[in-house]
Amino acid sequence: MGKLALIAELKWLFLIFALSFPALGQAQQAANRIFTLGQDRLFNQSDFGLRVRRDIETRSSAVASENRRIEGELKIEEQALTDQRASLSPADFRVLADAFDKKVEAIRTEQAQKSLALNNFADSEQQRFFKAAFPVLVALADELSAIAILDERSTIIASEQMDITALAVTRVNAAIGDGSETTPSNP
Image (cartoon, rainbow, N blue to C red; front, side):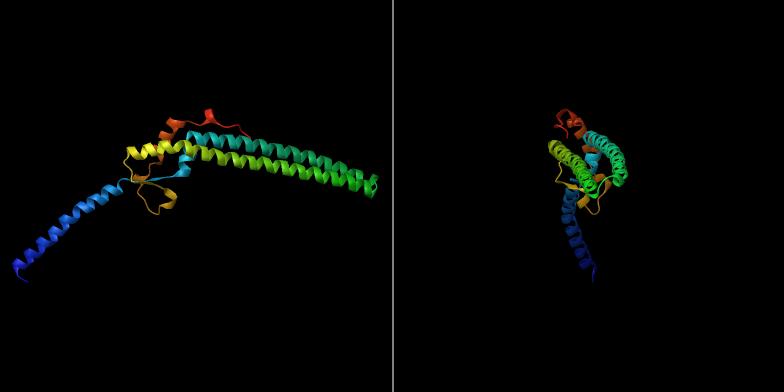
């Protein structure tokens, strides 16, 4: 290959590289406008999420304490029933034992309902949080000229520079606080 042919080929390669460089720059700019957000971290690290977690811990502790108290009372009652067995006819004992079993089942159902209500409270508070946080996240996306904000759970590999969770927590805290001012009636 002659010198002129080599120079012509190099010119074409340079031209192709130069023409593709703006596309590479545009791709880089687009990549710089894609962010990730840890939704779980946003909720859990926000003032709102911390308040909800404290509320749940307090309520869970109260239910657990109540369960232990009830369990102690039922053990005493069961022992009293066992102690009476020798002095009762089988039919009379069966009536008392059945009544005790019904009482235990009713208590189990009632305590299970309390746990379910606590789970429902946690779910509804999380939904309420994201509803209140959504406009803040939209404003943040506009401010960052974001093309997209992806949930970090659906992203396989991402630079830490793309993660805006800490910034989002700060903005959400400033906008909605811990949410206690608008907390619906608690179960």
